[in-house]
Amino acid sequence: MADTESVARALVTERFNALVGYARVIAGTEVDAEAMVREALVDTLANPRLLTQADVAELHCRRAIVRHVAATARAAASDLSPHDAAKALIADADPDAAFRPGAEVESEPASPPDDLLAALDRLKPLERLCVALRHLENLSVAQTAHVLGISEASVRGHVGAGVGTINALLGTQESPDEDAFVQVVGRGAR
Image (cartoon, rainbow, N blue to C red; front, side):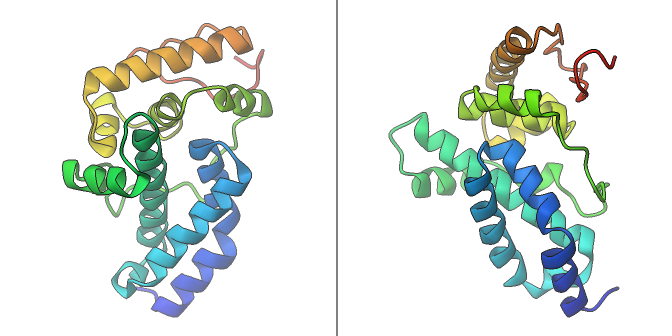
């Protein structure tokens, strides 16, 4: 067990850029991504019990980023304010289920190619979030639905629409099927 100060320092100094990259893929813009990571770090650093292991602290940051993006996307799709949507998301689902301590965290997750990031930028917020969780985080449809507090049918619909848009933009033919994952490589490198 590492001491909390060294875990906090490692999270802020060594993992910040990776977390920004993760948030960039999930949220869509660099400015939003950095702000979300800072919020997630503040939330994580305020809870010393999360600072016992680096992977637990990083998973908490990732979960906070997903919660923020999901609440914003749900608010945009409804008449709720982002704050009310976040409260509803937390009340409706246990997002921890798909982000349990001990889950593998890549030390440097592969960054999607620029053309894929540009295609992701063209998706609606919930489509982007569902595609990112399904195909970049490799969560199942059920896990994605649970994390976001939406139905599995909604996840399938958002993933299908998102992957369809990405295919049209990149000239690919990836499947949005439940067990198929989009290969995150540049075109032609199959």
